Length: 292
Image (tube, rainbow, N blue to C red; front, side):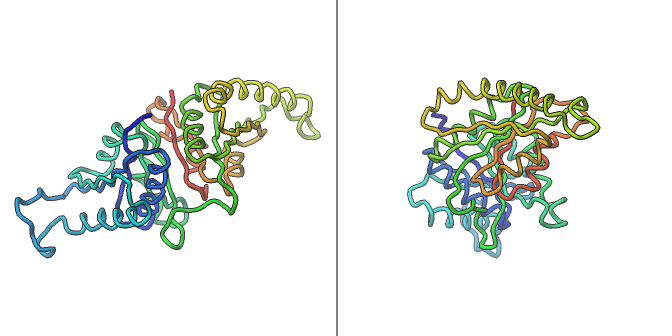
């Protein structure tokens, strides 16, 4: 088992607290430690002796981390938690932490507010550049992580068949196994122009495309079924928009897992269209997993 901790980036927002609580649950399931990290370029060096709060330049930074740790300990009394203050830009610190972590968990505002365009930038940048999976978690009205619908505990993985998807499937199967949850693997397959006829979609062409995609998806999933025989898994091909298919499948799910290419053209966005849509619009937590 990978013993690297789960790292949470904290900024004092309700979303980052929700991320800490979600990550603490995941760390408990996986038997991992939890690292609570707050980064600020203006953090002062620690004095040799204690200072009263009014004179401690790091007072508010410490308070952010301590508040999250207190909430985590109330939830998981025996969890191994490390509190970490880093004098760096948040994005730099989180990308460095990702190299030493099983995953990084961050708060996400999605598109709920106009401010999310600016405030969510660090989360999106980290999700688009980290070498390990990044999970983005929304907050509920109570400040906790968004929860799946009653009775729903499954994990959904949206995969592309245009390149390797083993990293996405590995993370999805590991997560489902840790939760003792079912896994739904989905491939959204846009129809090519030749599938359309004057009266609509040609059922013969659509059927051939769907059958071929189902065979390829089944072949991609098979090795992971064998490795995780206790995970109940279904695989489905949906014709049409891959982003829409993933979002519809994730409605009420515990987690949506999508991929992100490590290598892309210099002018291309770091998150593809599907990952962007899922991060902004999915109500459940979204894991962005880098792959080749």
